[in-house]
Length: 448
Picture 1 (spheres, rainbow, N blue to C red):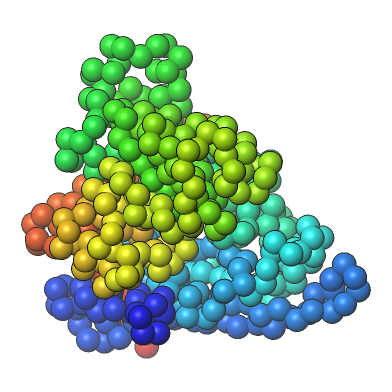
Picture 2 (picture 1 turned 90 degrees about the vertical axis):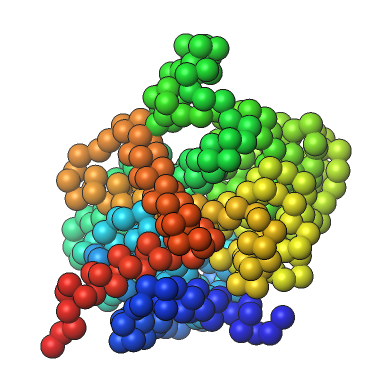
């Protein structure tokens, strides 16, 4: 593959270009949306545990703010690049728009290997990076969140550092915080839960291995119904009747997706992480697998599996649903022909290249694009931000009910455009999202 086929920013731009003509987008607005509004590149020193001073490079990119303040995660990874962060910021713009929450897109990252750093080193790096980007973030401007190799603790450090600079507590500067410093219930599971809702709607659309709520309500126990209410279904959600699922990536999004889908009746038959994969066609015991990974650092060697896989082999496993929950460019023109799943739900950002998109569409594989499938995280981040501004916090049930309603509505809005315009779901999602952003730009006008 050429560099343009794997460069995430080129891919993001090509996806925008693909829908610009369909929407008859004005040339000026199209050009405006092809490039980020603002980019900050910083190089900063950090004192390591051995006393050595190391210089790290980091980025914060704000793609668009026509619909509201910018929103997007911060990732710590050795492969972080400016073009990757640009692409992720653009995808965040579309993600917020497709679920119709009032944000624009942003993203940040630091080139580092967090696996080789102590907790103290990570804290010092996070706090110094926060001071460097503090000039462009804030609850009314740009609100970071967790991403690859960052978590609630990272967000607490950012909030504390930013608050120290301001001289007062500013919980709204980040989302994905710990509960006791203004985080939201349900945020940790939100990306996976939102993905689960879209998968369930897709299976329901195809009438594929689902049990209608009126049927399973007659059979479920009171305990199961109580759990369903807390999950946001309130007895109205479809159960997954042993629908088989393969998941690439077993971090936050992948492992929680596995747990939620399994709890709803799906059978998780293959999973992988960066070191390798495991499979069992009779179904993996997900709680035990999560415990195994917590103890060993990987899914490999799990006693409940009877097949060992390479990190990417899980993509080609025969299943009803495939969930890519790792990094970008995992499904390419080299392996797309080998995908056997009926439904692909992109829990990761940008896991499918444009050429692979075409191949999957020709194979009649139903793809739920990343800007829809994994928008649950930013949706509940929005809830957290609203709760923080109001200083009024919701129950987990309320969070999950609101998430289900937004994700279900967004899925059917995209599906309706897909069927009406006879386009794949990614194109339909982009048509919905780009039009909303373009309309906001049109109504606000160009200043001066």
